[in-house]
Length: 179
Image 1 (cartoon, rainbow, N blue to C red):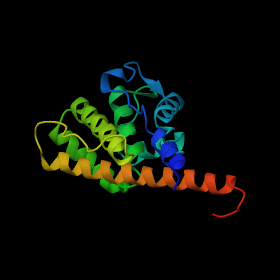
Image 2: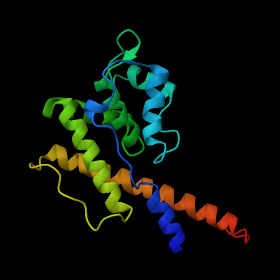
Image 3: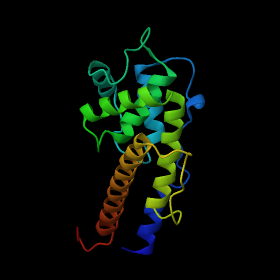
Image 4: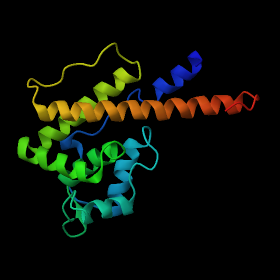
């Protein structure tokens, strides 16, 4: 892999930041608005991160509550961010169980903000933007270790996806036809 490839891969997460719980709109968002809002934040990390039909499916599967007056609340949007990021490494059943575990352990705002901090922290480490991940939070509960494990898996999957994508583009552009 060339240094130019490494830099392109790193740039995929430079400056990446999810909105914290209080930054998510307090007014309800309609389905299309919700999908667009989440996709705008995650588009640099994942393609097809969330669609209208995915959100509807998550409601049908009871991963999130039904919208009130067709509008998704701040809490539902926070859960949808979590689902959109982790859906490639957790089954729907495991996602549902994990969300239930979180609800029994931490308030939604605390859990979501921790998820954001940890995701940004681990992504920066995996992509080589910092030497080691920071220890976030004071307790090291089993739930936090599980969440960190999911985030590590997600981060490495995103890294691999970005690496293969950049290397393919470079191979296609070099004229050799190598893939």
